[in-house]
Amino acid sequence: MSAYISQLAIYPLKSAAAIPLSQSLITHLGLAWDRRWLLVDEKGQFVTQRQCPQMALLTVTVTDGLLRIDAPNMPTLLATPNHPCEISVSIWQDTVMALTVCEQADTWLSQFLSVNVRLVFFPDDRQRVVDTAWAGEGHQTAFSDGFPILVISQASFDDLSQRWSKTVDWRRFRPNIIVEGDFAPYSEDTWQTLNIGELALDLVKPCSRCVIPSIDPDTTAKDSSINKVLAEHRRQADGKVYLGQNAIIRHLPKDFMLKQGQQVEIVYKKSSPILL
Picture 1: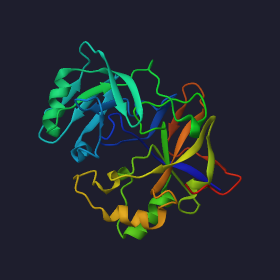
Picture 2: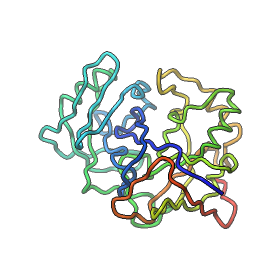
Picture 3: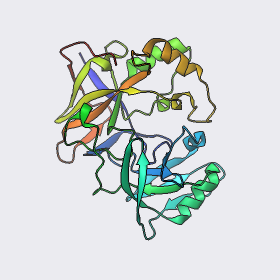
C-alpha cells in the first residue's frame, strides 16, 4: 500500500501559528526547532491557546537560531537573547530548567496578549524525558505536550471534514507529519512503526484532544461544533477524545531530512489497538 508525507509542519513557539515546511531536519527532539520556545506566566506555568487563543495570531520564523515574531498591529520582534538566565518552568507534570530570552520579548508579548508572560527557550543540553510508560527509556522532547512528533493521516481529516460538513484545516490539530495514502480513516490507530528511508518512528500513544481544535487559526473565533463531532465518534473508554498518534524516534540517521512526498512504509500492530 503506497503512503507518503503530504504535509510537514513545526511550531517553534508552542501554541503560535504553524510553519508549513517542504522539508525538515530531524533531531533527537523531533523536527528541527519544533516547540523550542515557550511562554510562561508569572509562576512559571506554561501558557498556550487554552488560556490565550490570540496566540494563534503569532507568526514566527527561525533564522540562525533566533526567533522572529509578528502579530497584527505590532512591530516585528526579533527575540535576541540578552544575558539569558536559567529559570524553572512547568509544563503539565514536568518541571524543567529553561533559559530566559530578553525583556523586550516579554514586554512585546505581554502587550499583545494582555497578560504578563515571559518567553523562554529550551537549549540543546537540557533534558525532558518522554513518559517511559509509553515510550520506554531514552527518549527526549522539548516543549511539546509530551512526545516529540505528532502524526495524523489525511484520511482522518477527510472523514472528519465529511462529518463536520466543513473542510477541516489541519492546523487546528497541530500535527508535525500528515501521511496520505489508500487506507481507511483513523488507520494511524493501527500503525506501529513508520519507516521513512532510514528513519524509524514508533507510534506509541494516541493523542488526546482539548479545546484548541475549536479555535480558528486565522481568526481565533471558537466553534465547538468540531469538538462535538469529533467526540461523537472518537471518545474512548477513558472518556477522552483522541485523534492522531504521538511518535518517538526509534532510529535516527545522521543529518536526516524529512521531505514532502517521501514514501512511508507502514508497519502495522500485530493486534488491534487498545481502547484507552
